[in-house]
Length: 112
Length: 117
Image 1 (cartoon, each protein chain N blue to C red):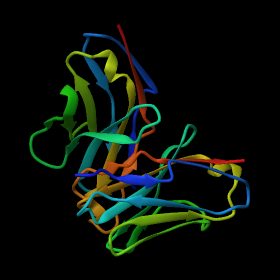
Image 2 (cartoon, rainbow over the protein chains, first blue to last red):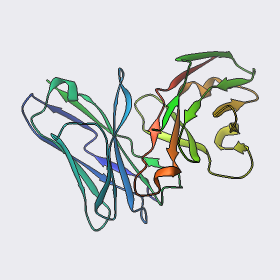
Image 3 (cartoon, one colour):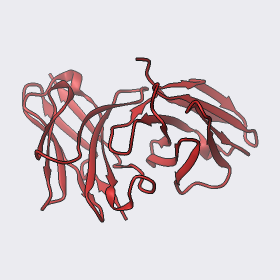
Image 4 (cartoon, rainbow over the protein chains, first blue to last red):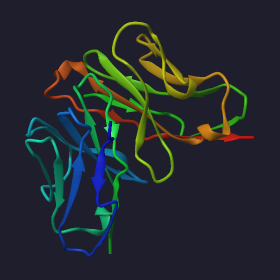
């Protein structure tokens, strides 16, 4: 069974630009979560989607948004990029809330 | 509100010795507890989980964890450490008080495990 895939793996953008990251969950998984990982703040929860509905949202500004499609694939978008948005963005999928999350390799975003 | 704490930023262990990585949590309902490991420049890998049942949970790569409700702890252990166990370890908790539609997974800040030969 294929794991969680994330594209692209690396991105370099400049301040003020916008970026879209993509995540394909494990087949059959309907829950997709996104996290931001930085050395200073650790792993911070961004949002969780289940069957195309956003169920939970972390404490991030409105510049961060996401969506989930009918095939469970998910995208997250960051508009008006700031230097502080440089981070590893991780996507994870799971069958249900009671099951473990399986993580993708992440997208390393660098904002210059 | 739910929270999880990993009191040690780093744990140093000699190869062959037992290791313990500590985790304590706070939830309103019953906890779903998880341990993950992260190798450099990689995503997180699931090690083990506690949902209900036996307090001693066995997981991947010889790791185990003990759920202690009275101490609200879920420490990760391994009887004999390997150099290849050196990595960043994360404890995570989901609170069932909020039900499946509201609670999200909260991660600790991580503990760097260093195993020396």
